[in-house]
Amino acid sequence: MGYVELNVLNNPAPSAAAGPLALGIDLGTTNSLAAAWRDGRPVVLRPEGRSGLVPSVIHFGEGGPPLVGREARDHAVVDPRNTLFSVKRFMGRGLADVAQELATLPYTATENERGVVQLEARGRRYTPEELSALILRKVHEVASSALGAAAPTKCVITVPAYFDDTQRQATRDAARIAGLEVLRIVNEPTAASLAYGLDQRDKGHVAVFDLGGGTFDVTILSIEDGVFRVLSTHGDTHLGGDDFDQRLAELARVALAAEHGDELVRDPAFQQAARQAAEHCKVELSTQPEAELHLMVPHKRIAWRRRVARDEFERLTADLVERTLAACRRALSDAQLQPTEIDEVVLVGGGTRMPVVRRRVAEFFGRIPHTELNPDEVVALGAAVQAHILTGGRRDMLLLDVTPLSLGIETMGGAVSKIIQRNSTIPCEATEGFTTYADDQTAIDFHVVQGERELARDCRTLGRFKLRGLPPMPAGMARVAVRFHIDADGVLSVSAKEQSTGVSAHIDVAPMHGLTDAEVEGMLQAGYAHAQDDFAARRAADLRTEIGTMIQATEKNLNAGRAGLDKESILDLEDALARAKVAAAGSDVAALQRARDEFERAALPLAALLMNNVAQKALMGKSLGEVG
Ligand code: ADP
Ligand code: MG
Image 1 (cartoon, rainbow, N blue to C red):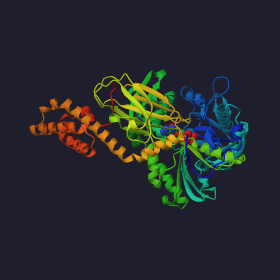
Image 2 (image 1 turned 60 degrees about the vertical axis):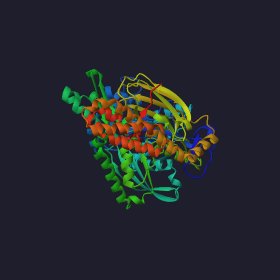
Image 3 (image 1 turned 180 degrees about the vertical axis):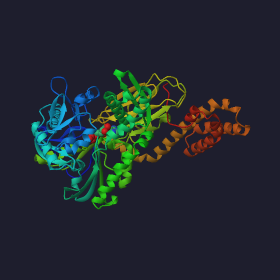
Image 4 (image 1 turned 90 degrees about the horizontal axis):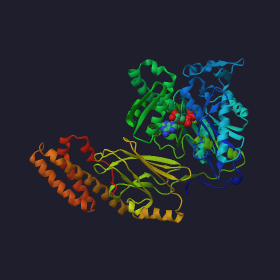
């Protein structure tokens, strides 16, 4: 497996075989999780096949112990009143502090004689500490099942930089109730910076931008000789991923209120279902240009769907992103710094997976933010680094797993479309859209390759699979999303799904194994050595494909268009068509380019005439070959 060195030094953990001595725990408003130091680096503790993320949600059923995590979150739809979430907002607060929060939440709260908030579910009252303890216990349980043995009870727990002493104390108390021993409470932005090894800088300024489920904060830290100091922190405790969900949910509310009346949209079960559908759609839009908002309320016999494009979503939520940037401006001004004085920007929180957030933050600070580690895991990873150091370990080097070679698929003409670039940190995923090359193509052949060369025949084949059962459609109409996913163990899975029909196919390959370091080195060298030739060969392949598509589209539509075109245009086009056919047989890039440009120009009158979506589409676009 390939590694990239983030920082100096290395030294294996003193007792790697004995398992970690302490956990790092991110106790979040929306999600919580544990990480630990293993084999010389921090890793998230995830039981096989699961993410390790525990939704910070508790459901009190009719009997038996309360459910915590994913199962509890699912109950939010059917039993919202007895499903408690966002408990972190109440930690160490009095009722007066949280009146505003309560107004927006479906459950009730009271205050006990000592002024501690208590939340009510199924006729019983619970303090936020007790509830957080239930979450911590669940996190510990998940960690134990990941480790295959009882997880350590010593831990480092993170809190927001703005938490005051009472809130920090409440967090410690929650841990005590859960049977855990807190070695240290660490600020979330500090933990995130530790995960990236930024403590190894002798001097510098770090901005940590954290967009969670219901809260946003940005913190400016200074580092000096490995010590972090909070210079300023700003944010909004009512701005997070949930607000982005709400904008999508609003689309459903408006449409369904018109159809079924206001009563429906006030139904708590409807609201929960809309929220979940919206979140699902939002998450898909982080990797796909378009996704479906799909809502079901079984007891009302409602199933509703609507497609949402990423552009539309970004327009609907632009003001939310702007609010995060306004907070960045204030945090900088409080720290008396200019954006250019920030040396590192770290993205934290699931909300920063949204491409628009990454883009805007990069623009704001004028530098590419750190995203090599999963933003919703980076705080727990940093807590694990701290836990390791506090239990006597030395962190001498931070290693990140990366893919040693690029991964992609073969497109028409034998070119490779790289989907995951080499040196991407794993786990990772990426999705790209493709379409069909020929009319009525009912199957597509996928050839998954690894390597830096531009043509598939020069790369290593990892596997092949077929997507069958496409309904006959004109070329360019099928919309196939190809998703590459590499899990933490380096296993690659590739899936292809045609969006309009839902037809899909899938293959698993293990790209990391089976190649020796020397082979990887050899393939990289070959990539560099042939870069020039490859580039030309690939360009030629792409141009030939493009011309081929244009020839097909023209031949198909020319007769229909004859009547509407003047003679000169027809002759011009026929001439360009003939010359394109000759050029397409060769491999001279310049000649191909000329033929393509010429052909494109000559085809314009026909294209304009047809104004036909299908033909227009066929005249551009990336295509996949037909199965022989
Ligand atoms: P918290 O710190 O509040 O506990 P997280 O950092 O786990 O929360 O972030 C949770 C938020 O991140 C949720 O709103 C969730 O919808 C959002 N989120 C998670 N994955 C993605 C994604 N791929 N794209 C967009 N938002 C995401
Ligand atoms: Mg968080």
